[in-house]
Length: 113
Length: 119
Image (tube, rainbow over all chains, first blue to last red; front, side, top):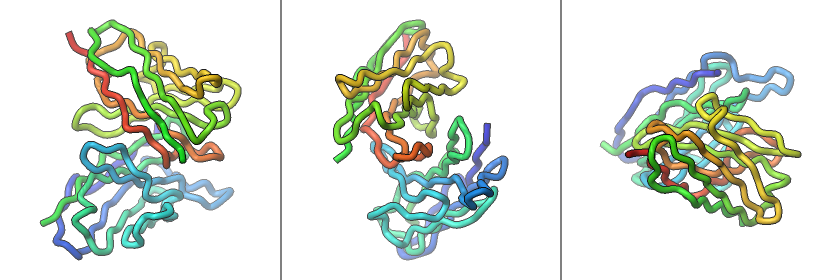
C-alpha cells in the first residue's frame, strides 16, 4: 500500500496570511503515460463530510476559491492557502488514487492565530 | 443533483452484524463507482470498499472476509454488510461516488452514519 504522510500536524496562521501543507507519498504517484499525478486534497470541517478541493494534484474543483492551490509532482506535494480566511478552519487531507487501496494522509489541522 | 443518504448505523455488540445502506438519487448506482469510507472518532479517513461495473468489488484488508458490499439496482441503493464486528470498526461510515471515469477520488459524499461497536 502507498503510505501518505503530511506535515505539519497542525498550523495556525493569522487572517490573510499564507498557509502551506505538505504531503508526501511513499512511492511516486505520477503516471508517466499521461503525466498526471494521482493526488487529491480534501477539506473537512467539524461535523461534516470531507469536501474535494483539488484533483490531479493541481486542478481545483468548481466553486473552490482560487486562494486554494495545489502543486508538486512525483512524491512531494503542497496545498497552499494564499490568504487564510476564517472559513478555512478545517482539517485538510491528501489522498492518492494511483493504486488500490486508495490511501489518505493523516490530516493537517488549520486554525487561526 | 447527486445525493447519497446513509442509514443503518447504531450500537452493536462485538461479534455482531450490521447492514448499512446508501440510497442514491441523481445518479444510477449500476453505472457508477460507489465507495464506503470510514472515520473513527477523532481520527482520519480510511477507505473500506468499492463496487462498480458488473459486480466488481474491492476491500481494504481490514474489511476482507468480514464485510460485503453489494447493490440493489431496483432500489438504487448500495449496501455494506458488516459481520464479526470489532471495537476498532467504530466509526462514521460515509458513502461516496468516485469520478465518472472510475478514478478513486470523491466529489460526492453522504452525511455518514455512525457505527458504535461496544458491549
